[in-house]
Image (cartoon, rainbow, N blue to C red):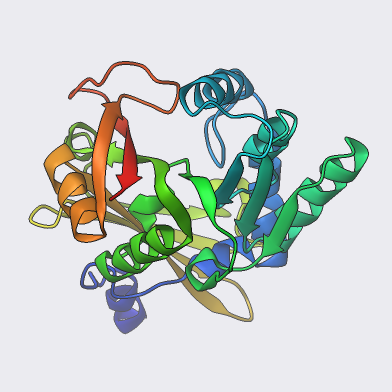
Length: 279
């Protein structure tokens, strides 16, 4: 038992493990995530419905979205952005490796008679011959990727964007990093049964890496017949660090905002959004 507790409490190196599929493709947790996506009142898997409506309006205006605008939404979930953007006559591709979310998005598209290209795939592996005017990565997905994965995704964005095309994404700020603390939590059926329909014992160990500006929420889920560990990594950014990564990927930062609604940049905001253009 002591050795098992030692393993549960062990601090890995930053981004040492990648377990995103355990969250998004597991039958039970993917259903939980979709439920959070579709809860219009909360900011969890997606932001609340009012925020998304304002965000889409701003994106449509900022990028002059209209007929034949080519848009790729990386991590589209159940299509909360893709649906609204397609209704503005843009040509939209949504990529997500949650089969459950994509199936829901496709049902909505069929009901609304929208021609949206949905792809069930880890967007790190996505390849296409199509070229886009705009790439979206919203809800701080970029922060969940390791430095190597971020270099790869920026290279992919550069490849699939038309000359002069743009990326819009949001990230967590250093102000938010300063608000995080290390902690250890144990609870029966941690997060109200989120991790399994069966009884389990859940451990949450939060580790903070000051030098790298990274936080790990490490979940260890112990059921009668299996034990799982899920690593939820988050990178926090200063604007100059994000700009450096974009420049190395062949982009330049055109503008910074506090969010993807277009509010003016505030260094004290917990998040900020960036528009980067393909050089």
